[in-house]
Structures are given as C-alpha cells and as structure tokens.
Image 1 (cartoon, one colour):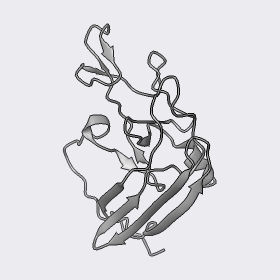
Image 2 (image 1 turned 90 degrees about the vertical axis):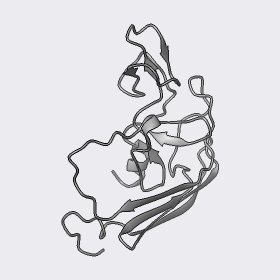
Image 3 (image 1 turned 30 degrees about the horizontal axis):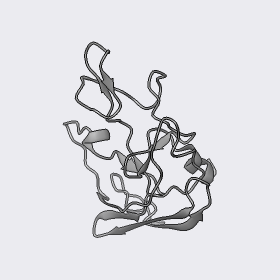
Length: 170
C-alpha cells in the first residue's frame, strides 16, 4: 500500500478483487467485485451479489429476489470539499458502494403526505419520507444486514452491512 496523501484516497485498496461463490440459499451465485485506481479515478466493476449470508428474499414484506446486476462506478481519488449539499440516496441516486460491490442506498422511495394518512412505500411524492430502518410502522422486508432487494433484483444496504463487516473480521 502506498502512502496516503491528505485529501487523496489513492493509497487505499486500489487493487481489491473478489470473486467467490455465495452458497447462501437465497443467493446461489458468484459474488464479484474489482476496484482499481487509474488516472485519478477509483473504478468499480461488480455484479452486486453480496459476499455474505443474506435473509430470505422474497419474503412477506419484500417480493423481490436477488439477481446479478451490472455495477460500474468511477469515483475521484481526490475528493474536494463543497459549500453546497448534494442529496443522495433513494430516487436521488446511490449513496456509495461497499467493497463487495453492493450499493449503499440509505433512503427509500416511500413517503407520506402531510396528514400521515396517505402513505406509500413506492411513491416518493409526499413531503414526509419513510426510512427503512429505525421505525416500526412500515416493513420494507430488510434482513439482518440492514438490506433488502429492490424491484429488478438489486440487493442494497440501508444501514451497517453486518454480514460484510463480520466477514472482514469486524
């Protein structure tokens, strides 16, 4: 590993590669992720399949099964501060990625109107946004990894990816 310069992530896991079969009963597929650093960018190529045990999908609160995705991201090695906020997550885009190539998408598309009487887990038009974690009124069918599956098969984390952290020795 090379020395890390203040503000640069160039010396951090620039040659990370993972490719193993996940025999979790609700996965049964290869988990692949490759991170490289080239020309000032950190590049991710992955299939979005988690590298750890997952909960039951589909389940009574989430009808979606995990499936392979095409995950590709280019991120700067030299992030710079900004005086303006950028909203990410849910309909506003992916918050980030874990080393295994599974995205972090903390927000949901769920919302309620101002009365709290008209709520939807898939309609993001209300002024009040529903969080997947930390509340008990709505069940998004998350597993013990604080993750669930979107329509289309994308498994993603809403909170701490417990299975990944445990697999890394944490």
